Image (cartoon, rainbow, N blue to C red):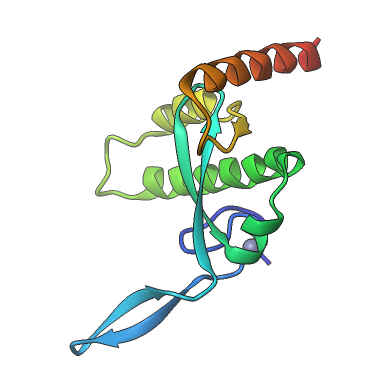
Length: 137
Ligand SMILES: [Zn+2]
């Protein structure tokens, strides 16, 4: 059982949503019928596309966002560890990793931005940040 976001896996239930198929003699990855994605708005106003299975997407509630983000951050933590360990990526040092994680660790999911106007997105991000400050206090 994995507890972090991982390439090709559902961000919530962590089911593997890819399968190997042979295409013109080569093994390639194809999406299973359960594969879906969801766009999430973060509180730095960036948008992040996550892989999610159809069932989890359907059941996804705003209350799930903190746990989802924990899984994503754990995924970044793991990925950046691999980058630091990779000798072919000398630009990724332990210091680089720490700075990257410090910038990204505290990000939160505000909402699903589809169909929401820019003004409304601005309002929600503002409110989210205010709530975040209140929680820290
Ligand atoms: Zn799922």
